[in-house]
Amino acid sequence: MGHPAAPGAQHQFSRDGRGPKPHPRWTQDADLFVSHRDDNRFDSGPKGWQPAENLGCVVNSPFKDAGPTYFEDEATGITTLYFTRQNNPPGSDQGWDIYATARTGDEGAFGPPVLVPELSSPYRDTRTAIRRDGLEIFLSSGRPGDDVGGPPINSASFDGAPALSFDGTELYFFSARPGGIGLNDLYCTTRQRPGRGHPAPSCGESK
Image (cartoon, rainbow, N blue to C red; front, side):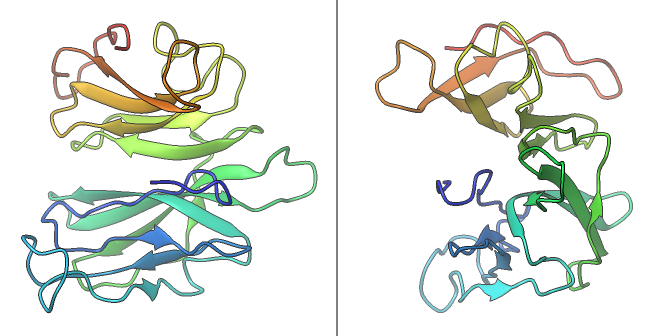
């Protein structure tokens, strides 16, 4: 669920399905918003999603903020929101970098975002997908040789928007590679279930 005006934009649900549900605002500059609901069985109505609210100037910047990924650490109670920001500093190539903001508890406020230099590069770094144990993260990047996960997943075309299944065995992404139906088609690659604390097995070919 993206938009050409703000690369890297997507929707995310919290683990209980009730909220927050950050999503970007499609204007000249994109902000992150949040919506809540009272019952995860309803999308609309009194118990469904309520009008989205801007996360505010502490999280959002004067530049484009988009592509949120929600990670909740049950052991510490800390929730981290990873997202991409096009801060456009001089000499920053395309300017899309990975940032993170954190809060404690379900009702706490997210703090000021910080750049994640380990995930960012001088190139375009946007959408992320984090494994539910927090030990592995996928991202879409324009750095040389890397779009999603290296061969045989990547192609010579644009591959991006990774989304990881709950058990970490399926990685969904879009690709503009030849042989598809449209401009950007959905693909899936599978692997065996990763073990906690161990290197992830190599992914199989996309299908």
